[in-house]
Image 1: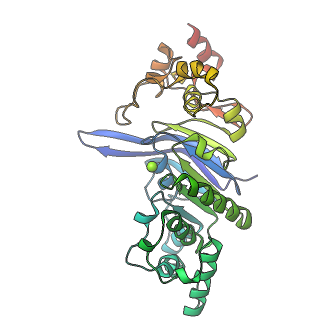
Image 2: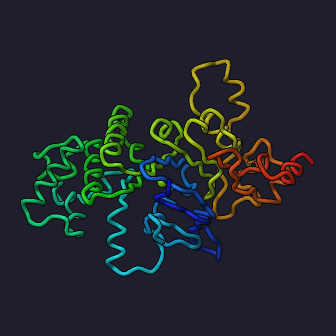
Amino acid sequence: KKPLVQVEGLKRHFQVGGGKTLKAVDDVSFEIYPGETFGLVGESGCGKSTLGRTLIRLYDATDGKVLFDGEDVHGTKSKTELKALTRRIQMIFQDPYASLNQRMNVEDIIAEGMDAHGLAKNRAERTKRVVELLETVGLNAEHAKRFPHEFSGGQRQRIGIARALAVDPDFIIADEPISALDVSIQAQVVNLLQKLQRERGLTYLFIAHDLSMVKHISDRIGVMYLGGMVELATSDDLFEEPLHPYTQALLTAIPIPDPRLERERKRQLLQGDLPSPIDPPSGCRFRTRCPFATEHCKNKAPEWREVRPNHWVACHLYGSESDRAAMKA
Ligand code: SF4
Ligand code: MG
C-alpha cells in the first residue's frame, strides 16, 4: 500500500536566545497509510505538536521532507497548488474555544474554508451544506446562527470537526482533540471521529500526551521523546511488547489495578526530569532517565531501525551487532 504521508529526516529547529537552537523536531522519519489512524504520543514539549504543524506547512521544515500523496509539502508552490494541498489536510485543535472565532456564528465558522475554496455555488447551497455538516457531527440546523460561547466544550469540538470536514479533506491532524474535555465527553468525540473515518475513508494523525488515550483508536503508534521518535509499532505490538525503555516506562505509568505489579512498576518509573530540548543530552536523548544507559549511550545516538516487521525502535539494546556488543562492554 502506498503511504499517504511520508516523513523523511524531518527537522524543525527554532533559534532561541544566546545563539542556541531548540531542536523541537530532530530527524524524524515515518509513514502514514491511507485510512489509518496514526497515534503520536509523548510528554508535553516533546515536539509532537510542532511535528503536526510542520506536516501541514504551518511551520517550515529546517531540513528533511514531507510528501503528501507523493507531493513535496514544503516545495515551491503556486498559490493554486498550495490551496489544493491545504484543502486536503485539515487540523483539529486541543482547545476548540480558542480555535473558533468568537465573533463569527457557527455557520460562518464552518463555511469559512468552503468559501475560501469556492465549494458552494450560492448562499442556499452554502447553508444546506452547513446544516448537513452540523447533523453529521451530532448538532442541528438551530445551532447555525449561534456563537461559540453558547456551546459546551464537547459541542465546540464538534463544531471544530465540522469546520475541518467542510472542505472534504483526506487527512486530519487532530492535536490533542479530547485532552481538554470531560472524560464522559471524550468517548463521544472519539466515537464521532471513528464514525467519520469509516464513512469518509479519512486518515488521521491523532496527537496525545497519554498512551491510554490513543490505544483503542490507533492502528499504529509513534512515541516521541525530546524531538525524536523512539518507537513505532502497531497499537497491539506496542502494548503487548514495548521495546524502548521510554515506552516501557510510559506503560508502567498507566494505572494498574493489580497491586502485585506495583513493585515492578516502581522499579521502571521514569527517573528525573525531562531535559530541555535546547541542550539535549549527547548520544541517546533518553539516557539521563534510562535505567539501562551505558557509556555507549552517551557517546553515540542510536539508529532508527526496523527491528521486527513493522516495529521500529531507536535504542542500542536493539542496535547492530557492534552496538549491542558495545552495550555489554
Ligand atoms: Fe537507554 Fe541506551 Fe537505549 Fe538510550 S540507547 S534508550 S540510554 S539503553
Ligand atoms: Mg501540544
